[in-house]
Image 1: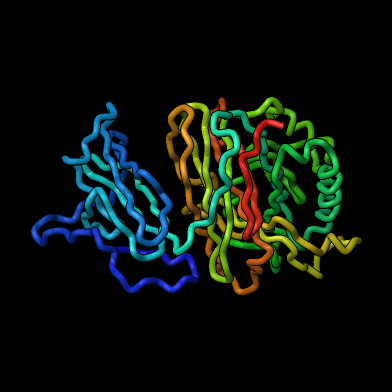
Image 2: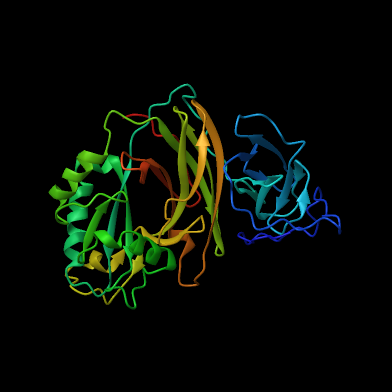
Length: 368
C-alpha cells in the first residue's frame, strides 16, 4: 500500500490491518478516471493512528451501492469499506462499480491530531470574508520594495481584516531568491497572464489592480470582498517539526455547494540581504512567502481538490505540508487554508481563507 510519509514521527511497525489483497485471478483495474456517476465518501478524512474510517459509495441518484462496489487503495489493493489505520501517513482510495470509477478520497493518519477549537456558535453560518492579496515579487526586482511599502500602508487600513497576504517569490526576477519554491513557481505560472511586470499585486486568483498602489488594491478588494459576510468559514489548528507542518481544519458551509480546498505553507522572517532596491531594513525580510501546497499542485491548479457540501454541513479536513529544504525554518511557518467556489465566469475563486501560525489554533471568524 502506498504510504506518503509527512511527519517526523516514528512510524509504527504494524501493518495496515484491514486491507485485503486482490485475489491473484482478479484483474488489476485501470488507473481510475472519475466517471462522475459514483461517489466515494469517508465519514472522516483525518484520524489518529488506531482510528477507523468507514467508506460509503453512492450512485448518481444518491443510493448507497457500497455492497456492490469495490474499493481500492492507490496500489490497487482491494480494501474493506471499514478500515483501521496503524501507521501515520497519507492514503488514497477510489471505488469502482462495473465500468464506473469514483473520485479519489485522501485519508490523513496522524500520530497526534491538532485540536481544532470548539465552535462557539454551531448554529451560525455567517462568517467574516477574507480574500487574498498576493504579491508577485523577486529579489532582483528594484521596484518591489516600493510595493512592500504599499502593502504596509494597506495593513493600517480597515481592509486588513478582510484579506490574508501571500508573497510569491518567482518569475523572471527571482533568480537566487531565498523565498522561491516550487509552489511559488506554480502560482506564478497560474497567474502569469495577469503579470505584465514586477512588482505585481493581485487580489484573490483573478483580480488585478491598475497599479500596486494601496488605493488601487482597495478598489479591487471592494469588488471581491463581501463585508456583510459569507456562508463558508474555516477553523484550524497547526503543529509540526523540522520535517513537516500539518494542520487539522473544520470547514463549515451554510449552502449546498461544491468547493475546492487547499492549504498553503507560508514562511516569514526570511532574510534576503541582496534584495534589489532595498532602502529600509524590512525590505530585506520576506514574510508570508509561499513554500508548499497540500494538494498535487500545478500551473493549472493552485486551488486544491474538489468536494461537495450539503447545506449547514461542517466537515473535518487534514493537511500535510512537507518541509523540503533545510533552509526553511519551521518555527516561522503558518498555514493558510483557502476555500474556493466557482464565480460567475465558472472560475474557481476564493470564497474564504484563514491563516494560523504553527503550534497555534484559530476559531471560526464570524461576521465582524
